[in-house]
Image (cartoon, rainbow, N blue to C red; front, side, top):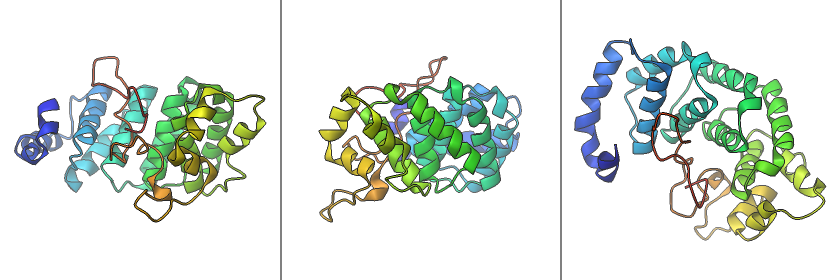
Length: 244
């Protein structure tokens, strides 16, 4: 995958036959971990599969929803958001419901990935999901980095929340003293815009849709690198910006 990512124009002749072969068998024999690594790799390569492949993949993945770890659930939705996939709302709501049931096992970083990915897919979760997500943001507020808080704030606005009603803005006002995340936000104009809901100046600095996992300043406006997997499935999201 590393060699293909360095030569994206050459990816098709390698990936197309592999994707066709996996799809032809309906992903028979693929474990939950294998399905996760497959779509995560496509997201890393920015390689959009054919529509028929994606349709078959979604059906196979749904059968494994309860076998995915929190990291794998976050990586799957992240990869689909990176690829700009057009997902059935019913399928995405089911995946989000599984994630909601397991929210207590989601660290702050994964919560921000799920929020950004869902907002990037232009999907508004169910009211109960949003309520549970806000509770998790409040409960784990001190675990978020400044980048992750900006990501969550941006996502909540995409879900229809105003800045005043945004859980991130509320918690930042409520705290008793400045934290490292506060200084991280205040020192980065892009992060500050996302938290406060300011529009970017029209001088090529991006817009409100720039938020989430594209704030790292390296031109990558998609989400992270995917979280580290226990079986060595890639570099994971690391160092510097959680959005790079």
